[in-house]
Length: 329
Image (cartoon, rainbow, N blue to C red; front, side, top):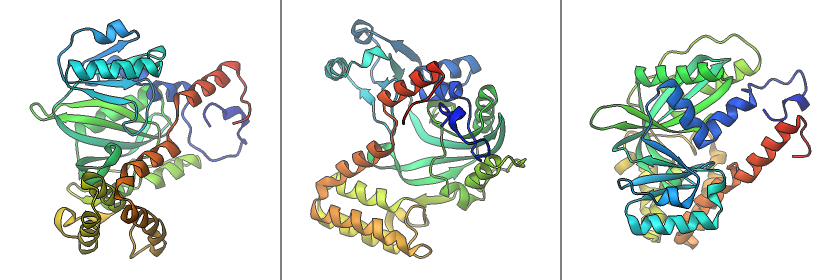
């Protein structure tokens, strides 16, 4: 929509940053440049464009990131020389060096995510949560809300520099030894806002109001320590780990009782008591898993493929933008 702004109706209520700002955060290299310019911490980062540069000696482990990717697609963790060479062959087959690759040092710490809404560079709402349990594709099964004024300030600086208008989300690693937040990824959209809602931060409401051109007051930080879960991700995780129907049935029991790792958490994605229609997608996924537990990873991969922005699509939009006209989508 940012690339096709001139084709949108004049009265359409939508919060859109400039296309150049989208490119800055959508591209892994562009984000690294932005963070360096703003002096926002990030892991030690190299941009490599050839196989020889990639094969150069560097400490293990490290991460390799394709120029564009969603939900950990296009990210490899390299732990030794053998794995490095295997990843190199895969990258050459994909012609991944054409867009450049990011090589980043590994940081030991906790994965946290921050979501924000901006009104032309002014931060109006922000929420942070920590991943408690990882699910398929790097997603969250369990998360807990946190408050971090330093991170909120960094997010505000980034949005102000981009004059961002709309929703913007980031992932970072909070280093265990120093409590330094190292930013590793960005998403130019709103990501899973229910933990924020349960904490008292209304991210979709803020986004709607600025989309309508209203002046939006700044929302304070929400409550800390609120634990939420994504039940579907929990089922996929249980099926993926051991691929046994008994594990899936046990996970259903834990979810229904709010027991085990789900104790004290609130459901985000399929709250059956308040939205009974959630039983339809839940039932479909559950039936597929019980028939073939090994299908868990395929289901997760298909979900990501259905919404992720591919490099080919990004190149098409860049070409449209450069020509100054947008053809058929």
